[in-house]
Length: 485
Image 1 (cartoon, helix red, strand yellow):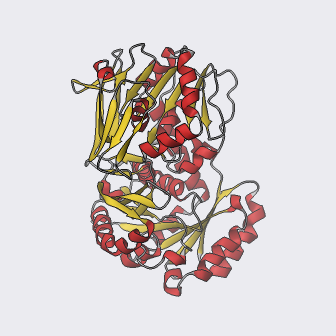
Image 2: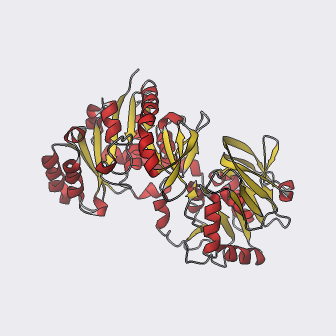
Image 3: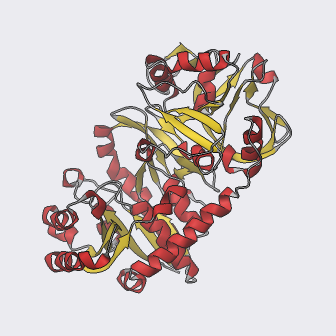
């Protein structure tokens, strides 16, 4: 079996490519096709553990879920995880292969194309349809040399392209027409159709716009896709989504403060909490204070723990957290947040930068030593109070110390994490903790609320089903299948 394939590129970043592919994956799956997602190169610190023991971008994990397929490293063969303003960790077919600065990575791309094509052909042999997502903007012609993410891949794999523009940003006619204008003619010839995304209002008002784009570019109009407001209920991959301030929740009894740090990772840990009607999740940025009436301060994961710890201290979050603890407030650290809660973090091999060590927040009597041995594993067990849990570990480093004698959980019969002597401060390496309804419910009750009535995972699937129906109503899915080859 060799699957048909179709690629979705964008006029810019965050035009909705990931969501469109997820919706189409569910829609075509409901039509009876075996659909697999593929993204040649992704840049994200929000990753998921795969069934074959690696990691891929969170968007491809959601798209695989939409297609009701197990996660595979081949769905995202090159994952870049930013560790600084100019450099990133390079993950190839699920495994870390080193670090590279932006300029160095450009020279590395030709070597990676072979691995990308290898993964793509493997997926094609296992599916009826492969939906490919591009990265960033198709019009970044300054990066076209050695490209593996957009037109470089489309040309190498001979996969036709559908271009997505975001009307909510304004200027969508110019952005779609301008993309064709700046592309090499052979690259532009790969584009066969277009979608205008995030429309609000009466579709009849943009009928002439769709016709103009088709006439200017000679592309097939696939559809004018209205804004889908429930997209906020799906796990997000892009940290840009953290910039939007959440609406205040009338009647919410539990307040959770989350310091947002520069290299935040696996921030989809927050999504299930935000979905709870009784929880107000407060994302606290530099220049703001952690509210004094929070019931819990939550420190989430980081791709550069030492750097983010220093950033946390530089803006005074350490003072706010210490005051919160003095008032009897609770603190939970997840993964990198757990490491920050200890007395010291050491990086003797320079995994995150210059070798050395820094003082932690000192709220847990533990110390962490970073190493290049990365743990990637789905886990299950029980928390300290006997409540079942499931999640995954994705971290480097080993944490030890007296507070580990009071473990946060038992995983496979082994202790994991740490709790302070007064029970107010907890740390764990387990991500996905709050996606587990049992754990989330237990935490709500610990914080003075009531047990959760939310089935989070079923809610995500319900949104995917409604997204698929949204695609069926507004896009020409039969036309997409005709374009695929």
